[in-house]
Image (tube, rainbow, N blue to C red; front, side, top):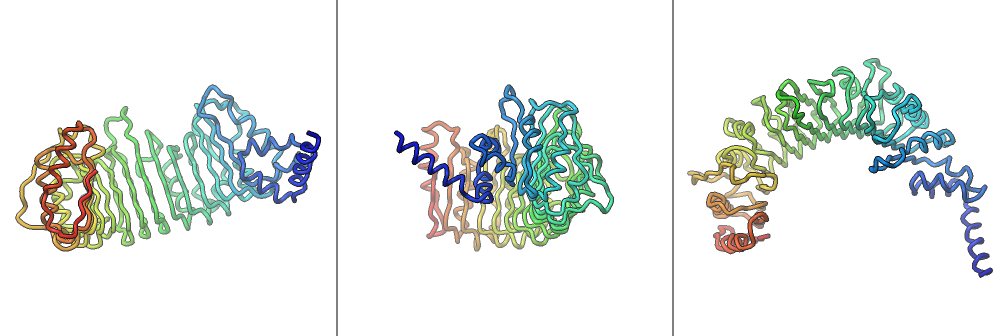
Length: 436
């Protein structure tokens, strides 16, 4: 027993004998609470944790537990590191909302310590909180995430400048006004990735994203069931360097997008598009993923847009009869290689209109280009079988056809569908049929 204790002590001595910089690197790999707790190990460890460069404070999802705020406030008073690599503060409903909770004080400290990554999430019951102006002129900040009860109030003066910011996420925050939003984004000259999630009233009707450097944009807006008319809202995007564009907005708001010649991926999950030129902005895209809502179907029927670069198309039926506009879309996509039909997000698929009339001509992409076809949640309607038969009978270059049967059907129906699928003829002699 005595020998074991001596060996244990020797091991502890070897760890404690490591250089301070190495010990700090080790503590940066563990949760902040655990790093602070090492101060009780011995005098050698008393102040090592105060030099850690990664700080993370998160309230528990269990609202009955005490807020992490008290620990955050006390530990940051003792923290001495001149540089902070990343700082995360997530405060939940259990956090007190009195004057003693000074969020801005510790955000300012992180900025003064040349913070590289900053994440602030406030889910408390208090109103939106302003962050210090120094945040919006932080020279070294690369990644910034703001969520919840935060008031984005960026002065229009030239003092707002984030020269290193490449990654910005704005989740359900409130903006002082539209000018504040514009000032914020214009202060980010090399912004590459932007995520915006909006809900209810955030003080912005016209959400303008004019960022020449922006390559990746994710935008989502939740419907407010208490508001009948959402059409007074508008998204305006002017980002000529955009390569990835994703939008999920079922509020009925309009969307105006300038031409994006470098676009590689577009995901269009929208209920309506008031501008007839909406789809035109995506004519140069390589991969298009879209909900076929009633409004989108109407635009597909009325458009002659040539998707000359389109290689992959994913459609998610969500409105009236969609087959005719789909064929028009295929006819305008001469280089299409991959085509996917996804029924997963239809709740009342039997109520979805679906009629099929054999077209007089075959889209060029089917007869000479299409190599991969997939249908997710294939059902038991005659029209579905007729459409699938048409695809397989005219896709001469098809290499793989993958059919996933609707899992909501009973086992007997699924087995019957699977047997029927095996008998559908394929014009391509190299086509491999996969049935799931």
